[in-house]
Image (tube, rainbow, N blue to C red; front, side):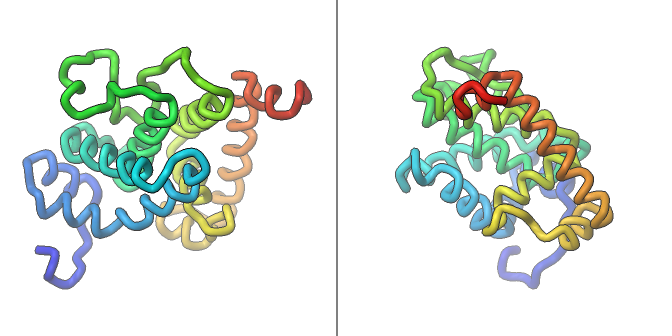
Length: 207
């Protein structure tokens, strides 16, 4: 399958095939977006995780996408964005010292949900930096679909801002809508972090 010329398979179909145990579909997902997602993880966490831990976060995320593919909800965002959210949560778990995301523990821990768009297990054992990362990821996960897709694309972009024209085409929107959604998303994230006390802590008490 992977040796054939590239073909367009929509996210819902790809997730459905993975949910049915189609390993070729899983390999296709990794081929299509694995390199980009590893790049995002490396860019975001290289100062707090070593190369092996970043690799672990990626494969923990891939494992959860494969084993929970039937829970993919196309209305919440793209399959690649869902994969990224799950991999980010795995990276945060490593930073926070949580081990419950390990494969063998999933079925025994009903409080842990590694594949939701938001939420997940929390812990009181966190340094300021890991708390900020956690709160930012949770705030991104709560954004409306268009805003979340734009912010995730910005985080993956080399200069921190994805091309609006390409985003509009991929998301079925317009450049102006992308600009407006990005602005709203940034305001929403700032408010969320302020409410959590993260910005106050970073700015020495100034809002």
